[in-house]
Length: 235
Length: 257
Image (cartoon, rainbow over all chains, first blue to last red; front, side):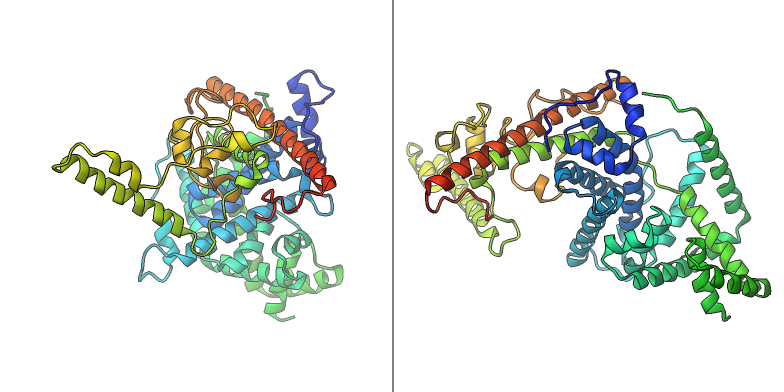
């Protein structure tokens, strides 16, 4: 790894960003290994949301999820030279994230802060509706309410099923990639995903009968589709 | 086909992993079984719900990331330049003893100081200096090879802060850090340092343009730091190679920590 300079053929940063956007993750990390800091920025922009989403659904704590997302991305930067293309880049990143999450959850379980009679003790760790400083639109509230319900349902899936389930459903990793991230056998990955799906279905069953929630879901999807179709603007 | 088998197939089918012959059997079962049709619909809606409720990152995520990266790189630079000063692993059994000893000494010193200054013999302040542990003087620059940068923390405050602060290359010990939470060994062990005026003069302002400029400054600084880390690593390798060829025995450069 030679971080000597940002040796890119593009003078214009916009042009450079556009060129980086077309590259595969595996090519970007090679550029990071060669010292191109903009390639790292592109990796961050591709992965920060995905990582946060995955970690948040694992730990249920926004501050901790943010911290672990940052730590994952920092490790990617500092240990970029260690990446070899024997596995997909996404597999490498999610392996780092999964290990961090597991370590954190193990630490938590070793030193329980409170004794609860609640059968779901993890619920105590969730802060109650943290205030959002951003725009308080009704769309956001709807989305957050639905998000809270889904987060609660996801959190009730046992961890050993939840990890492969989220890697498949949220991150859309292939079964082979999940096998690499978790170290499980392929058949175990498949059966755990299947069990988690069945469990998740039972947990969200009441929601699936709720017409209002389903209407909200459709609205959210329509808004997201409209945003996707909006022409992109460069910063 | 039994429903349990059909549901196993359904799970694979929505991932596109069901072989064609099994798909045909599944479709026959679905035609006849309303429960399993409902199961398939629920799985698909569950996926849509997960996709629609993806948690949103905070606005200042990039800024915090660059700040923490900055801290991690500073620490890495310090560890690379002075590997023999690296802290013992914090998890080592009995690692709390030195801290306990230091705290007890400080407490005892405080009690004696009160006794000396408030008691009848006001003119004997010598006691206070003699009781507590002697402050660790940052002797590192004198022992280090030429690669040590001139910005090493040698202020009295840094000296008093103890050995872990000697790993800081860029300023005084912590106290004004903007992001003080630990994030693991590579970032959180040892002292965390603030950089007076070096990287950012202010925090997150909420003003889009200003914040983008702050992030950009941090990025540039981090790029410099990374270069510095690699420069140190290269120098350290050269130094070790030279020591290996001259056959200097038993020189612990801290690699075993």
